Length: 140
Image 1 (tube, one colour):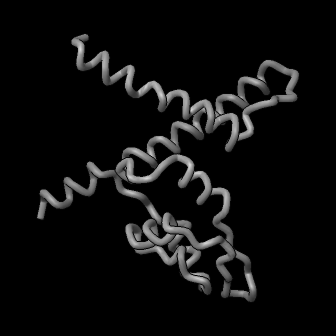
Image 2: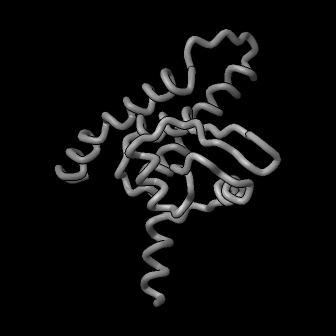
């Protein structure tokens, strides 16, 4: 490793520390009141996979434009309530992150009133990585 690589690795240590903080605070990884080794291992595996998915979303899909705190706050607070057979109300608190994510994806996640078709489009949405977006642009 050259000096620049060592510096870069050292400089990014805070991301590792943040990942542990996410597990402890947002994913309730501690305290663990489990007794069997298999359930303890399973619990921490789920926490680790959750952080991995969060980081993939944060870096590969959203281009490191949003903090893990913003993403986790969105994941915890986004909620809709059914008011009739095909109508829903978005009860999530409006935020800058929700507005920007809605603009980026074209999803109606910042609308107050949602129809069943809106809910289905949100559930079926597939994020594209920056790499996928660039390859589509190059093909055109």
